[in-house]
Image 1 (cartoon, rainbow, N blue to C red):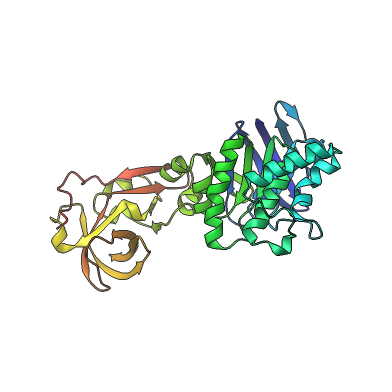
Image 2 (cartoon, helix red, strand yellow; image 1 turned 120 degrees about the horizontal axis):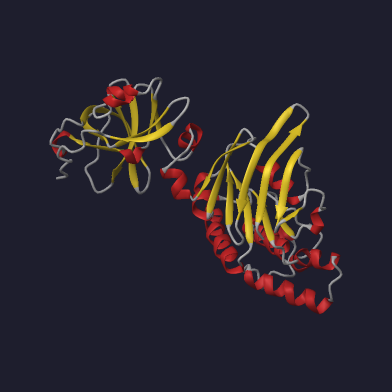
Length: 354
């Protein structure tokens, strides 16, 4: 299903939950609605589902305006955060529920339910009740039930929120693979960046009811279009006066400019690891944190506390140690614009790792 949303607004009394949001979703794409809690993500999802009515704007499915169309006529499947399974029904009956409401033939119902039980990895559990299943298994039942009527659009409201971390990781990969195989257009709400980046074909960043940016995870991370997106995605440090860092003196050409510097924009090492070029700062390690696959290093450079990564293959740095710091680039922004600035002095010799 191809989706077009035009100038969508939703107010609850004096609260403007969704503000003039417009976007397109191509058929078969998996879209993540990402943003902080209370930003309007679920309101958008519920309006697409027909569970809420827009205050203004248009929702168009396959060229047809569906604002007044009831949920059961929109061709959607909805997966809720808390599963919303029927406790008194078996797995089989939960999955079959929507097909029975549509009064489909018993043979057709059984064939479709068993097909989905096989697809979702629930074979052998069809006669169990929800209380006899793990959290991950319950969520798979919820997916199967939503898919049973063969919807054209699958909507998921924080589908992994109620599941523990290990199972959540497994279900992410499973969901992405399943949706790709089915080719169904899907939109899911999340406030988990890792989840959105790993699962979604495209991400829509929603904040304070507004669509801040839409694009692939890589495009959004590499080329943020607003200050909010730059600060929300990934770890970073805000530097008030970036012109004081070597290689960024030209930042003073734009008034009231601040910088956001991501950890991967920075290289840190012992003094012996660097030929001290004109682009390199002296800093002092404040804290170091083990992250499993790397070290996260907090380093003081002048009045700024920067965050960067260091490989486990290199010597461990220690708090209080004097180090060399090279800032490769910074994301600059002011009231009217944003852009990436490279360190102007990086032509000097790069660090030597010994």
